[in-house]
Amino acid sequence: MTAGGKGREALGRSRGGLSTKIHLVADRRCRPVTRLTTPGQHGDSPQFIRLMESIRILRRGRGRPRKRPARLLADKAYSSRANRSYLRGHKVQAVIPVTEDQKEHRRKRGSAGGRPPRFDAECYKERNTVERCVSKLRQHRAVATRYDKRRAIYQARLTSLRSASGCATPPDHGSA
Image 1 (cartoon, one colour):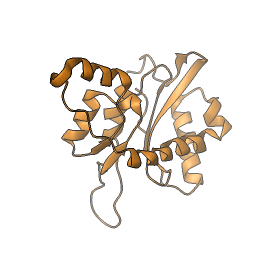
Image 2: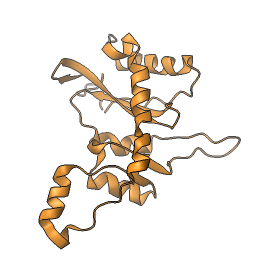
Image 3: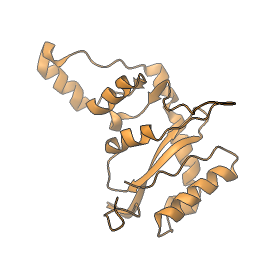
Image 4: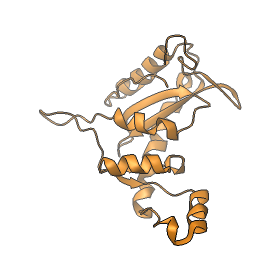
């Protein structure tokens, strides 16, 4: 966003007033790998590719950081054709349930609707790690209520909470 751009402080109007949305990628141990803050009215799916491109998983010892997970577990908000195509192109296994409207659209098209994407329900049960990571962050009043006026200060607070708990600190990727 430009300096005078709309949403540059990641504050947006939502049903409850001013709000900020934290988009987060977490590992299996509920630690954030990367995060992104946007105004509250912004959708989840448009931030998906930007969030995926910001992943950097440090290797033990020497070497470049990994940029792709082996598989991605996400909720229905990320079940778009563009997101699935991005994951296929980067050889990442998608474990994302299909929304009801997508199922209905495929049924209406009949045999031209194509094959439904593969979904591993047993693997999807592990998706709760992201929810638990967000819950840990939201236990802190300053994060849950966002008293900070500036995005950079809010990001610093998120970073300090992660470093205080001894977990790896994800990089700051700003707002949309």
